[in-house]
Length: 380
Image (tube, rainbow, N blue to C red; front, side, top):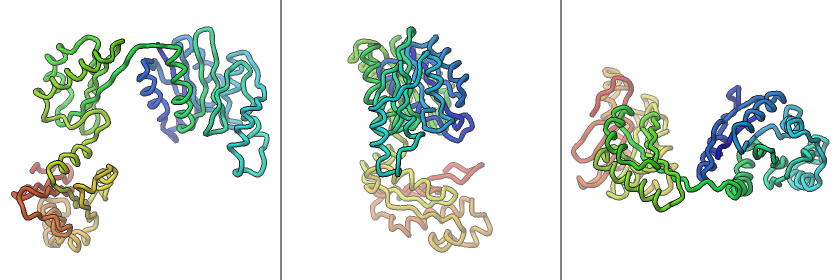
């Protein structure tokens, strides 16, 4: 079963707002076996809405629309829907009660624009919006279903989760869909595909393999569709296990797991610790780590030494090294790393304890120091 998504709003087309709604809807629809055929972003113009809606309903059985339901003049989605379904706007008491409830204590009185939120197309089923003033409108068309929702993400997500997805699942039973993503690093896409050629041949036909490259890593996604959940899950798990003998050292996680999560897991497991001496990253490395619950089990801290005087004052970097070699150099990097260890009291008494990771660094025998310092860097 195919779905079309139409997002409405000039703000999407000029780059003022990024369309995260479509990505979220695509993931959730896929989970219940509904495939998104096309995503279209259009401006707040009635003719554009009508044209896109006509195309979508001739292509897909379900059309989901977000945006253009606000109280201002540029929100014209309801007018376009009335033209498309040959109907008129009528006042809905239940929607007006929701508007009053939402605005109580926020405005002195309900003005005409707020009241107009309760004007809805006569030929639709109204789905109440518990977190906003614009209702969700469900239309039955001869060729399928059209649903119009607010563009505010929290309102759209609640409507989809509580009402739209359950109704679509009940109407369109499309089998079981499973996905598993393997995160791979340090292998170019073409090289990985060549390495996995025989492995791909052994994967069952009902499991699809996709290569999804992104900066710093590559995601290998396995997707299965069918009626037997255990069969699909088993086939995906078997395929993943068969990957490890081939590229195991390049796999750092599955699904939503990040590299920093896996790093913290390994550090905690091995009773080792982590610290940064950062310069151009400006504390971003520490931010990535501290955003993970339980990071304090391994992460000790970071010194952001952006200015040279902080490098010398807080990390003990020799000013002559900066002058002679430059702030971005191996010599300064080494002193930054060692200075961070001393400043954060992280030099451990045992060679089996303490993994210090500054932004840049050199190898030492009792602890590991690693990082980068820009284009043309040496690998240590």
